[in-house]
Length: 186
Image (tube, rainbow, N blue to C red; front, side, top):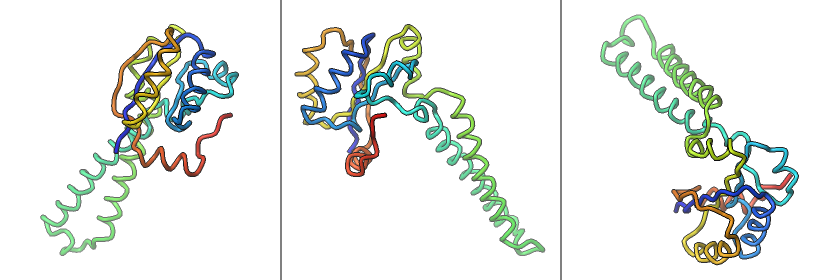
């Protein structure tokens, strides 16, 4: 099951901190809540806010996966060509061809990750203008039964502006983070 992600913008980190505390008090766990800002120093002065990790601000994971898909295609093509042209029956054994396929897959994955570290996360890129204006983006991943909680608490924060919704983190990932305490405030 995938959670539903709701985005909000605000210029006040104090208001966002209160909002996060109220959500957590109502049963929404810390791994479901994130704050994105260009000024990490100011966010770190609000110890209760769960900031987006710098690694996730970039598109490393997404581009690495794309690189791995391309690399898999290239490696498969190489193996099919070797099989089709009967290169292995000649003087060449399978070992160098399989090794070259693994190198191609690894290089493609690395190249995708290298490209991704230089670009903004594709899901967060739409907020670049808002962030440049000094605003902060707050997003929360909700289970279906938690949406009413959000709506109730949202009424207490008229300065928060809705910025859209989309599919959020997978449920298993949030559960894993909850279970093992992988999210900690700095």
